[in-house]
Length: 303
Image 1 (spheres, one colour):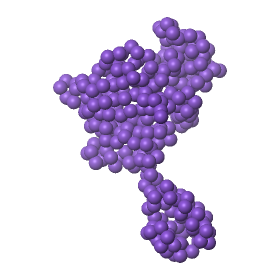
Image 2 (tube, helix red, strand yellow):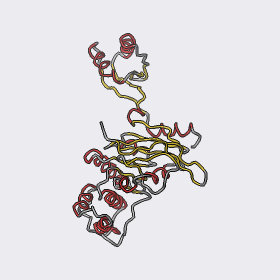
Image 3 (cartoon, helix red, strand yellow):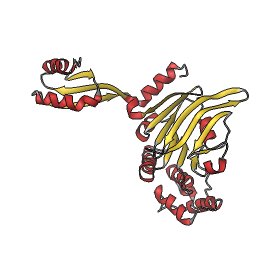
Image 4 (cartoon, helix red, strand yellow):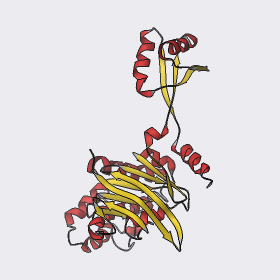
């Protein structure tokens, strides 16, 4: 069983008497990448600021690696690396000097830690160049290295791919996935690029009007149970599926469409082949995260 790295329990936040965050709960396990989605003004930034200790919750509890942010702030924050509102970099200094200066503020960050972070983000060949010569993507990588130099167990990233071109977005996404898989680092990432969240994240939390309206595994969330087969003798195949598995399919153009228990798909396909049908192609039809997000937030009357 994975370790619990981040836990928000009944967290609320009032600003000027108005409840901005309303009794929210979500968790992140070790090595998990969690996408945090919501329309503008939904409460994403307020929540992230509370998690990284820049703002205090009005009620509820935030735990990082078993330490309460409210009661044991220093130990909790020692486990967190973050990029909130973009990395803070000095253009006239080299990338290495930026990291060295930040590392000097902590007694337990060594040169080895700095170079390890540089390698993790793939900056070895440009780390001694001035930051002013870096592309936006390289600056984001350096910002990520800043967040990694003290070896955090949780990364909190607020819109980390803002301003990046498609290549930069792809490279950043791959770095994040590798950090989770190879280094077992947990990542909480807020983004308005919903398709990117779908590609990057294991799980997703959707917030709207200060409330969490969905916590779910991305794959399970998007699975509709809809399947289509491209098979010969469609009419006979439809009858076979109905008689053998009580699957009520319909013939559409060159395929059969039906809603099935996906866990039984292997048995169903083997039976079709064993019965003599030529199965050319099969695919599971999924929703996109964008479609689901718009559906959920529209129901809440935001969009």
